Length: 144
Image (cartoon, rainbow, N blue to C red; front, side):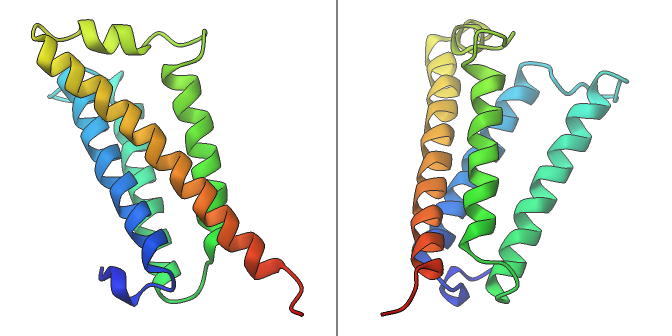
């Protein structure tokens, strides 16, 4: 999809960057064995969530490009994603904190790349949430 056709080019770019980083983070999950081939029953939920998330992002981009959803969609999706990312990797309840991700690799460089990708993903999701939230608030403000 062409970013220039979207209503706000910056928001479109932020969403695409976050989607790219999400794909890279999911590649890390796959490299660490969260998705096994041939598929096992433990891998099916991971695969279904992965497909649903990318369908939601792709569908959201399509609908945003065609003015069917606005920045509020991205603000809400971003906020939910930040919360899930925090619960999944930074909360005291997670079994996959950054230390676990780092030590899952034999190479310190690979571990650092995996953790760096996670941090970049979280920062990009925060940026999407804040930027979309500002756009949403501006659009809802009474006109003077």
